[in-house]
Amino acid sequence: MVRLVDNNIQYGYNSMTFNPEGHCLRIPRQDSIPRSAAVRTFPVQEKNDIAWIWMGPPDKAHKNEIFHLEKFDNTK
Image (cartoon, rainbow, N blue to C red; front, side, top):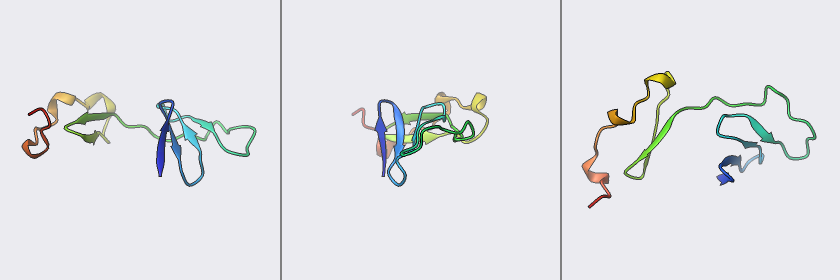
């Protein structure tokens, strides 16, 4: 399970915590964090209770290009 803790993501399996930029902030029972402890990040946009993840080049992610899904429209 993954939890959101103060706008950071904490993984349930190992409790490693990463900030929104992908840098590791905490590794349990480890005093120092290697600089290489990081994960790749992707632009995300929420629309109609769905998380849309753009896995291509970040500069080409445009929220106005997310198509409308009538079935999930929660504005009614």
